[in-house]
Length: 239
Image (cartoon, rainbow, N blue to C red; front, side):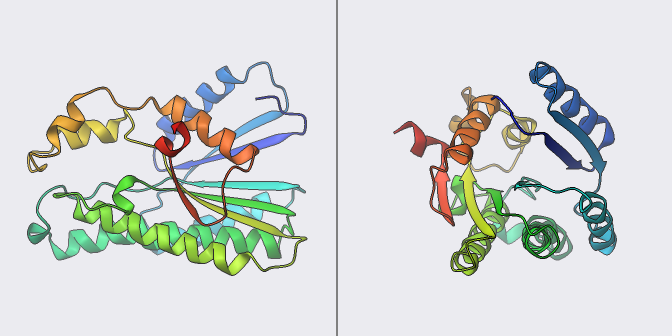
C-alpha cells in the first residue's frame, strides 16, 4: 500500500501491552512510509458505565484534524459461552450481548454521527467485522451467532439510512466476514469442552491467515468492491 496523503491510525483495545505490540507491528510493516502515524488508546469497550465518556473524550481529541476520508473497523467482541443455549446464565448473557451488540452498534452509530456533524467528512466507511455465524446457525455457538446476526442487521439498516443522504457526506457500510481465522479466539473454540462435536473437525485444520484476510479487506475498501450494507465473506472474494 502506498500512502500519498498523511494517515493517522487509532487503535482501541482494553490491553495496553497488546495495543503496543500491534502498533509496533504496523510500524515495522510500513516502515518505508513516513506518512502514517499510529496511536494507541486503552479503552475497555465492554465497560458500559463509562464507555460514552471515554469515547467522547477520544472523539474530541480527534476533532481538531481535517480529513477527507474516515474508516472505522469495528472488530471488538467476545465469543461468549460456548455450549448449549439452554445452559446460558442470565447475567452472562446480558454482559456478552451488551459488549457484542450494544457497545458495537452504538460505536458505529456515534462514529457516523461524529463524522457527519463534527468532521463533515466527505467520505466515511464503517466496517463491521462479521462472520458466517451471522447468517448460518451453528450448534453450541448460539450467543456468538445472535451477536453477529444483530450487528449485521443494525449495520445494514445504518447503510439504508445513509444511502439517500446528501452526496457531500458519503457514508458506506460493509459487513465483512473475514473467514475462520487462525487466532487466539480460534484456540478458545478448539479448547471449549462443550463445543458441539460436529464442529470439532472443522477447527482441527489450519485456518485462514489473518494477514491474507486483512489484505483482501483493504483491497475491497480502496477499490470499493462492495455495495453499502452488504454482507461479504472472505470466500466470496476467492470465487
